[in-house]
Every structure is written in structure tokens, then in C-alpha cells.
Length: 441
Image (tube, rainbow, N blue to C red):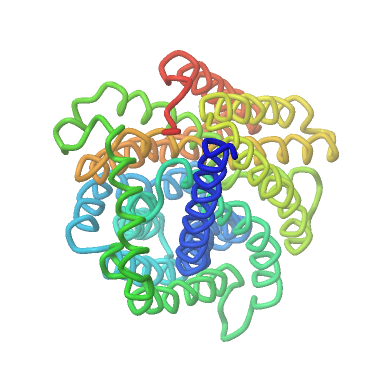
């Protein structure tokens, strides 16, 4: 009898059983948290960018110029920038349950208040404070996931939650168009006012659910057995051994953190060029009905949702991140060039918008697998927030510059060329500075 072969078979069976047990545990964790966090992200992104749809009526009703809208849309990101790092550090200290609930409820109330602005100054101030209220939300979720999932499992989880971005566009476009078209005149209010009021309500409800349902740490998860909690803790501790920046100061001093912030700045420039200006681009194709604009705007996000899932699966299977960021970013740049050069063709313009959506939506979850692979502890809280807050200044720069250029030239093309170049720069930076392998095998 071949005892060595028998022992090898026994060890192989035990290894498979252990792997199956781990898969089962992480599946339970994902089922418990991911649907809720996904719904929160959909609501957050919808409340952040619905101003792009409101613009179709706000500008004429309030006599705002394109430059006023661009500056007001971007003011959100100044407040976001100044309070992102403090917010994420507070989440790390106080716990995700209370802090994410606080973020959601306060931003929803402020988003609702946008319905009653009447002057550019009021619009600027409210958008600034909306940014303060939401600061820390997305990086807080990313930080929260590092408490529960090791890096090789986290790429797909981040992608599932970040799918809230295209889903908010898929659902938000038709919903926003319908609300603005059907609610106008109700209780003597404009359709864009009802848009802000009604789309803010889900955030308040979800904030209360988070407060009751979310567990801050693995140690708090009484729905897992002691052995299951121990397995997750071991995986997280093993994952932490490959992270090189464990303190706040080290994260701030790391050149890699600042390079990542610049890369994300480039990607987000493309993301918000799409979010804030897509309704305007579609309207410029000769589409006058707001409901139809909403339906057409859902097309790019529908395709992007599929592409993001496929790319995230490919990245996790190959345990590779760099080229899964570069490819989508360059694809988005090509889409912007298509929109800029073929603006007279409805088919090619929508194709270009779809390429932009596919690229930026697919690149974002792949990007976030990079910093969470080497940042740990309080350094992760500070580093992730620093990257996100600095990069989200693109949300201020992109709509402000595009709005100014459109007002000066009468066309969106020059702004789209600029953002396409910015995306290309981001891809070059990823290729030049990010290691090919950052995922622990």
C-alpha cells in the first residue's frame, strides 16, 4: 500500500474542505453586508450627481449660467476635500455603524434642501456643505471592507459595491427624467425641486437601517461562531503582513500615496465629465423630452455594469490590477474623443458615452484594490481618505473647467479633449509607478 499517496490524498481533501469552509464564511459575510452597502452607494451617487439632470430645468428657472452651474456642481468637492481625512479617521475610531449612518442622514437632508435654492450663492454654499456631510462615505466603506475581507477576496466585493455607480446611472436617469417631467407644477413647485426632495428620502431610511444592522468589527459578529471569527481574523492578520504603511504619518509621507491620488484624480475627471454633462450631451443631439434623455442616459451605464463585473472577475482570477486599470482608462479616453469629434452623430455620440462609462466604471474598483493592498491600520484610514479627498478635487476642477470652456466656446468639445488627455496621463502614471503585482497570493 502506498502510504505516501494516501497521506497526500488526505491532505488534499483536508485542504479542499478548509477552502470550502472559508468560501462559505466569506459568502455569509458578503450576503449580510454587501446588499446594504450597495444600496447605500447607489443612493449616495444618485444624490451626488442628480444635479446634472436638474440642470436641464434649473438653469432656465433660476437664470443660472453654464459657468455658475459648473462651479456649483464642483463646490461639493471642496467641502469633500477638507473633511475627508478627518471623517475617515473618526470612522476608524468610532466605528462604521454610527459614522456611516450619520453621513447618510446628514447628506440626505442637505440634498433635499437644494430644492429651495434661489441664488448662485445659496447653490454654492449648499453644495459645499453637502460635500462636508458626505466626506468619508466611500473611503469609509473601503476601509470597512479591509476589516472583513483579505485582499484576494476584496476586489470582487469592491466591484459589487461600486456597481452602485452604474446602477445609479441606470436607474437614476429614467427616474430623474420621469420625476422632472411628471411632478412639475405639483404644489406649485418645479420638477427639479421634486427631484431633490424625493431622491433624498431613501438615504434617510438607509441611514437608520445601517445604524441598526452594521457590525463594526469581526469581534462584534455574534452571527458567526468563535471558530469562524478566528478564521477571518487570521486571514486579515496574514493580509496585513504585506502592508507597508501602518501609521498616519507614514501614509502622508509615502510618495506612492500621492501618485495614487494623482492617478485617481485623472480617472475621476472622466467619471464626473460623464455624470455631470451626459444629459447635456444627449440634449445637444436634438432630444428635447426629459424622460427620453433619462432613458438614453441609462444605456451607457447598463453596458458599463456588465463590463465592470467581467473585468473585476478577470482581475481577481489573475490576481492582477495594473493592466486592469490601464486598459479601461484608455478605453474611456477614446470614448471622450469620439464624443468630441462626432458630436453631430447621435449613434456615435452614444457609443462614445458608453465607452466612457465602461472605462471609468470598470477602472474605479480596480484602482481601489491598489492602495488597500499595502495600507493597513490607522494608515489605511488616513491614506485611503487622503487619496480619495485629493483625487476628488477633480470633481471640482472637471465640471468647473468644462462649464467655463463651454461658455467661452459654445461647445463641449474642448473640455472633452482636455479630460481625454487627463485620462491618458492617468494610464501612463499607472504603468510607470504601480508594481505589476500588489495582491497577496
